[in-house]
Image 1 (cartoon, one colour):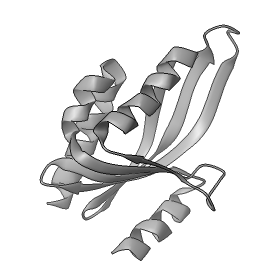
Image 2 (image 1 turned 90 degrees about the vertical axis):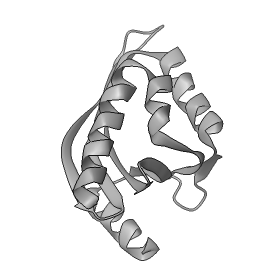
Image 3 (image 1 turned 60 degrees about the vertical axis):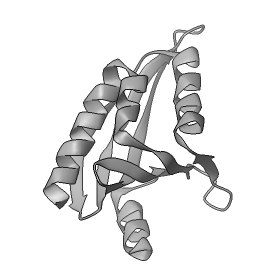
Image 4 (image 1 turned 180 degrees about the vertical axis):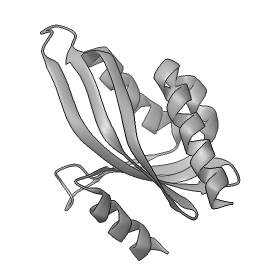
Length: 133
């Protein structure tokens, strides 16, 4: 089952490149997505597909040519960790941006049910996933 989750994660990633709404078919209605970023003590939590989609919609308003490249997929059973980076440029400024991106998605019955993003490293994501099992 875990290799199937990696394949689903890859399909989710590809769909998100072209159409975020189409990618949401891979996301459970009651998903819980947590943005850790630089505020591990006060993470931002999104409940449900609509809230999470709103978060991604904001990025599309601010940046152009915005996308994610994945360098590594890590199979952790129910969880899939993706290591990569975001790239784009500010719509109004034209300033290029690039940032490291490590996330973990818990898959159940072909859908993401929990999503953790904003890890500083793959090791931090591995530790978080192991602590949730």
